[in-house]
Length: 91
Image (cartoon, rainbow, N blue to C red; front, side, top):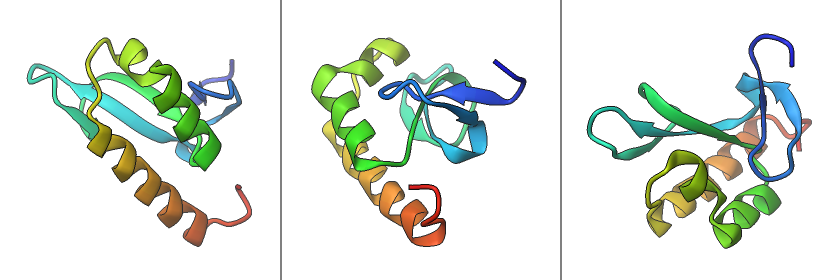
């Protein structure tokens, strides 16, 4: 994979990391955040299908090695709507 490229946790698409939503388990507090902080991270496409698949199959919990609250998936869906409104050509 080229530098600064990441892979979506759900659909396995490879793209520049700016195109993805980044979910982070913050260090050392182990809280889960979106697009901020340092720690263990996973990337998702800002598409409803990828977010739903990650939730249904527990992929984020497995990748972050932490329990992901359901509120986080609601925040991801809101971010997906924002990304789609500002960059409709991506998805």
